[in-house]
Length: 344
Image (cartoon, rainbow, N blue to C red; front, side, top):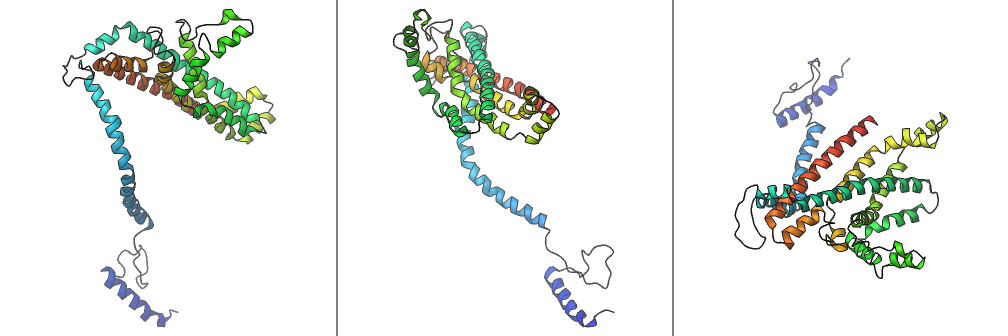
C-alpha cells in the first residue's frame, strides 16, 4: 500500500525542482525507473567539481611558477641560444662588431690538438670519477648500513666534505700538495721517504690523476647517502627469505640487494658523469690548466679561450660541442641503466 499522505509533499518538492532547473521531473532519470516514482535531478558529479577546482588551481600554480620560469628563460635559455649564434662568428667578446664565419670555428676545433687533449682529460675525469665515486660510495654505504650505534655520527662525517664548496676544498688541497711546504711532502720526508716527494701539481705525468683523486674525495658524500637510503629501504623479508634458502652474504647482495639498488645506481652515475664532464673549479684553483695545457678540461678550455684569449666565438663553438657530449653521453648511459632497472 502506498502512503497517499506523502504524495502532496513529494509533488511540491518536484515542482520546486522543476522551477529551479527548468527540467521535467523525469529528465535525466535512470532507464527503467518507474513512472510513478518522482525523480529529483542531482547536481554536478563530484568528478566534474574536482576538474573545475583543478582548472582554477592550475592558474594559481602557474602564477607561482611564472617568476622562476621567466628568470630561467632569461638567464639560461636565451644565453644558450645566443651562444649557438655566436659560435658561427669571430666575436672577441668585447667589441660590438663581429663577422659570421660559418663553420670555421668547428673546423678549427676538430684539428686542434689542445682541444682533443681537453677532451681526453674530461673523459678521464668524467668517467673515472663516476666509476670510482660510485664504487667507493657503495662500499661505504654498505658498511654504514651494518653500523648499529653511532651511525648518525659516521654518516655526518662522510657527508661533511660535500658541504664545503669545491673551490675551498681545492684551495686546501693546493696547500697540502705544495712541493716545498705541503703537508704531504713534509710527511714523506719525515718518515724517511724523500724520494717519494713529488711536485704533485706540476708533474705533467700525474697531475690529471691527482685532480681525479681530489674530485672523487669532493663528490662522494651525496652519492653515499643516496645508496644508504636505498639500502635501508630494501625489504627485509626478501633478505630473510634468501638466507633461509641457504644464500650467503655475497649471494644475498648479488641477487637481492644489488637489483634493488638499480634506481640509485642510475641516479648516482648520471649525476657523477655530469659533474665530471663539467669539472672547472678544481682545475682553475689547482693548476689553471697547467703545466702548459696538460690538465685542461673542456669546461676550463671554454673559459680560457672565451675569456682569457678573447675568442668568444671559438669558445661558444666549444661550449656547443660540450653540450652535445653531455647530452649524448647522459642519454646513452641512462638508456643502458634503465634497461637494467627493468630487468631487475
